[in-house]
Amino acid sequence: MMRWILTLLLAGGIYTAMRSLDQPPVNTGVQGSAYVHDGDTFTVASVKIRLFGVDAPEMDQTCEMPDGTDWACGRWSRDQVRDMLRGRTLRCVKQTYDRYGRMVARCYLGDQDLAQLLVRGGIVFSYARYSRDYIGVEKAAIAAGRGLWVAKVVAPAEFRRSKREN
Image 1: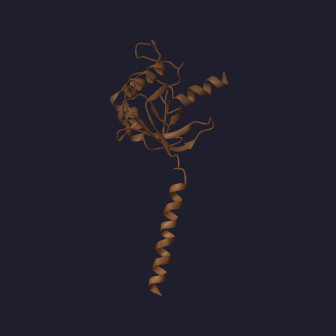
Image 2 (image 1 turned 90 degrees about the vertical axis):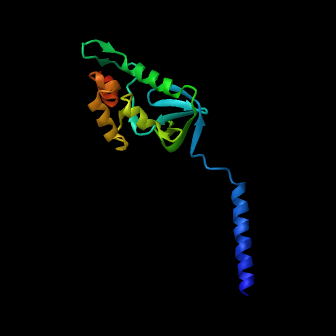
Image 3 (image 1 turned 90 degrees about the horizontal axis):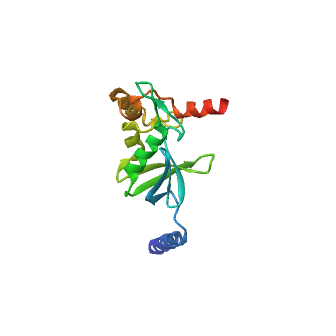
């Protein structure tokens, strides 16, 4: 009797395993080279991605340098990301989708968290509204005066809000 039960369990397990091979894999992300739209948005393998947990200056956003001159910090942020990703493979893991239909993802260069690298370099802001993961890294970038933090900057969300109100 025990032998019959074990045979039945084994056959059921094999059947279940074989059926799972027929199922398409769950798409949890993408991998490949990136086309950079701005500091926090890019396309990988034909998928438009919004980087999770960070916010970059808008392309038309300027920041004020200590000498009072305007600096095209939105374009600078995009260019820094473009230079960092050029010729490299980016792996992105889906978290969700945003209201614009973009995949919101954590992305990695090898085993390095891209968002963390960008916040550490002062290239993008930590976006505490959606994640608290990078707040400490941002505080260190501010203290060191790296990247955006050499200038008088307005948070991208605040910049977008003021544009809508005007």
